[in-house]
Amino acid sequence: MTKNARQRGKVGERGFTLVEMIVAVALFSVVMLVSVGTLLALVGANRKAQALQSVMSNLNIALDSMVRSIRMGSVYHCGGGNYTVPADCANGGTTFAFKPFGVSSAPTVYRFNGTRIERSENGGSFIGITAPEVSIDITSSRFYDPRCCGCRERPAKSGHRT
Image (tube, rainbow, N blue to C red; front, side, top):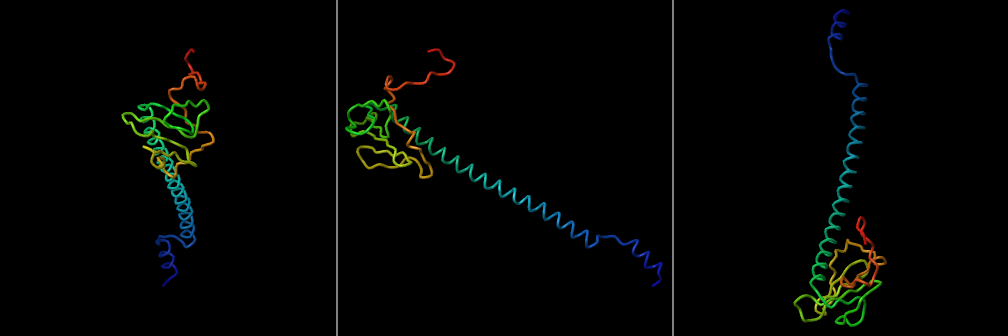
C-alpha cells in the first residue's frame, strides 16, 4: 500500500480514541453514582415520612375515640381511688375515668402507662389504644376533667376579648 492510500484511509475513518472513551465512561459513572445516591436518599426520606404519617394517624384515631366517649359520658373522675365518685383534677392526672353513656356498669378508665395510652372497660384489664410506635411523653401529658371549668386557668383565645 502506498503512503497516500494509508493517509486517505485515516482521514476518512471516524470514531473515538481510547482516551475519549475512558473519559466518557468515567463521567457517566460519576453522574450515575450521584443520581443513585440521591434516589436512595429520597427513598429513605419517603419511608420516614410514611412512618411519621402512620404514627400521627394512629394517635388521631385513638384521641378521636377517646373524645367521643368522654363527651357522651358522665361522672368524671381524675386520678386514683374510687372511679365511680366524681373527682376534679386541678393539676391533671395520669388516670381518667367516667361513666359511659347508656351503660350502668363499671366506668371506662384511660391511663398513661409508660409511653402509651391504655383503656379499661367494665373493670376489665387495660388494653393499649395507641400503637407501640407511638411514644407519648407522660411527664408533660395529663388528663383533665372536661366539665371542670374552674379547676385550671385556661389561656385566653387570641383575638377575643375576655
